[in-house]
Length: 111
Image 1: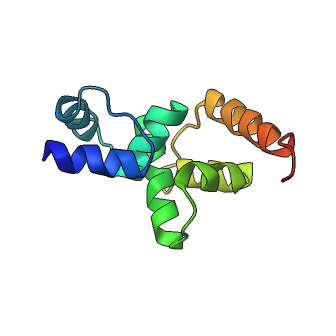
Image 2 (image 1 turned 45 degrees about the vertical axis):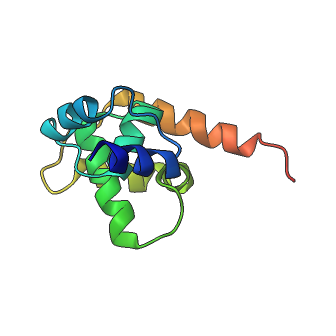
């Protein structure tokens, strides 16, 4: 199991620090897959928000990395996904993160 976790983390370029124990804590808190885990670890997105975003990413069947997918989405799409059917409160820091990442994308030099 440990080797599988390390392999999955390596191909997604994410660090899972102490391996299985970190993953088990995140799973117990509601992170359902590696895409959600990547949002939590790489971007610091709250676990429930990350899970909802990962489910949306999966449902769209896109090949883009979830972090790139997150940046490419409009704020209204992100907000609608996080709110969900239960009208969950949106963390204000998520909007700031999204804005900062989008601005960073726009300022990248073209190849």
